[in-house]
Image (cartoon, rainbow, N blue to C red):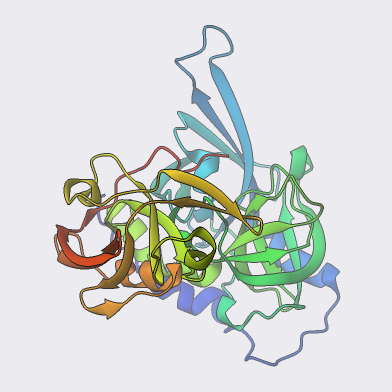
Length: 354
């Protein structure tokens, strides 16, 4: 992506509307109406139009979402799933003015997109908070455009932190909230009691009431420069999916098992497949948890012990594409080493799926 002469977005975020986030433990007691009045001018609704070539009729699809301005010149954030594949986009500002928008960068793993809105004059912008200081029980509000109702604010608390959602790409931890989030809120800000943005609303559970999830804003900060500079986020990839293996299952199943990362799926064409790693073949539910057994169990990566899924994810994230990797795997009662080379993670079929 073409470079510009503007200061980097990351540096401008440090200025963040001229004030820093309150220190941990600080209490903000101003009315929620004041929080809304300060934040809502930076929030906009977004309509993205896609062309579905696979349909004979209704080939045009419109996806509605929300977003918020992070620069006075129109740089903004939303969810990648709102703008993915869009042929055109229109943003409706807080003033009611409609402006064009274009995508500068997309991260399909974190589900974040960096946009540039064609604003005619400097705009109000949101202020980043620090999601690492968010605690369960903290009061938050979501501002967005649920089911077409512009500039709606809903209220709740942070009901969980560091939530890793099953079957979501990247094992990225989320903030959980009971502030009502509905279709159309996607991409809008989750705001703390001090008016700072601590997350981006991205996901709801249709199986429960008032369980929604937001991308922690610190995770967004970490990829923002790369999104701006290259339009994407480069991540290492080995090509396996799996979960923590509890060796106590071996006593139940009467088979040799060990602690580590159980490989359940090996991606087609991945370094893992080329290196001969095996995925699972036997689906089994034990105490309500489903396992795909029979695959390799990774017990070490480059000599560092792996005991859990989190251990494995952390070690893989520390790799660089092109780096040679030595995996120690447990298979059929014996241990062996497997060598492979990490590559850049491609876009996978399950990225940005419902």
